[in-house]
Image (cartoon, rainbow, N blue to C red; front, side, top):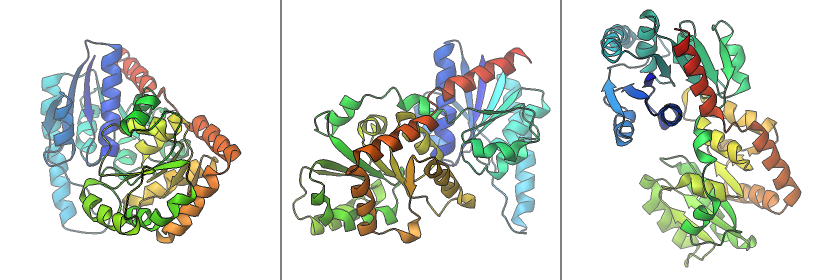
Length: 369
């Protein structure tokens, strides 16, 4: 099968696309993949590192208010469609998959106009504008959250597949995660991470919690600051805990995140769709702090969906402080029954077979062409 992947702007769009591509290639070693992104987007760095052929189109997003810039965006879209058609005619894909971001617009639209089967994947509970637009043209819409289904009533086909990032993480080894931190495999770990780039508000809460951590002597804390915040956060942490003890790791980044996730008892996290897919696939209780700096506040909708199911607690960033966060962590970690109930609820939401489900949809589209 020949597949075109497209999606960009953030890791939340890129990694699901790569997970779909990996699953398709695993199931059929003869699979050929082309990824179409933007020249300046994060995908231009990440995708080539995975050994996947990468091509680009120029595109920007619409402003949400009247602006002359939107006229330029329309022109870029039309040129992007023309460029996309050229790339698609050259590669001759059996199916095209879009996972969100502005670049999906011209690529998926061009594929639909050329009669190439298309599938789009929506990661968030509250769908983005690009996928809402494309749902009129695509053959299939795959969604991560059931709450997204009503937004795509006019699509030809909608399936609830979960997020394909979940498929990768369930293969992670808990023992390796503990060993990478120098901890025994039975350790109770609280992992706190503010996304790949970090989050200042969460780092501030980490520092504020520092003097309180000794109240949970049987718990090991792993704080992931993000590389740009690491030095500053580490200096502040050393001031509140002069000698960093063996019950805390402060790290700029985790290169083995799936393994450390698998080893974690509780996760404190943003509520990006990929993160939630991984947490629920592993059945991990969580405290979710949605980023307020995202389009249409979609992370709050994501977090609310998981919290309403009993798998997480949600704290809005405007109410976040170290003392309150530690009280929530302490309350959950000291209640074994609650931990089990939250973990069971998380596991009920998890869809570790997501990538396989989407790969199956791709085969159907390709065979019915």
